[in-house]
Image: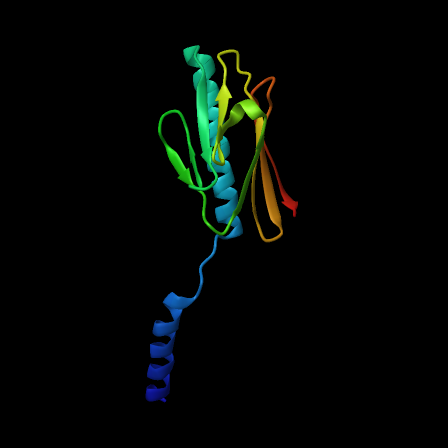
Length: 138
């Protein structure tokens, strides 16, 4: 009995690290909230400081960086898309959602999804207001 238990534990110890780990539903929601918080902070900073401020979204690098330099890395197993107006494009699948001193922005939508769950972070071009829609079924 002890030998059988030892063999099972040894097999579990070998197999456990090889089991693929993916982003959970909570991890997806946390990433969405982190990105939305960064966008909101940049809008607030633009209004407070009276200057243009931008949040840079790099689809290939899978990062979102705010004006203060804080970066959120988007896990590889999440779908990551951006839809913006042409002035927000930096080229090479990089975008900068810029907020103006009056609160307005170039606007856009950041979509993060995994499996059947999808979230959209919407930035209103007129007001710069940032809101989160989801989870939605993809």
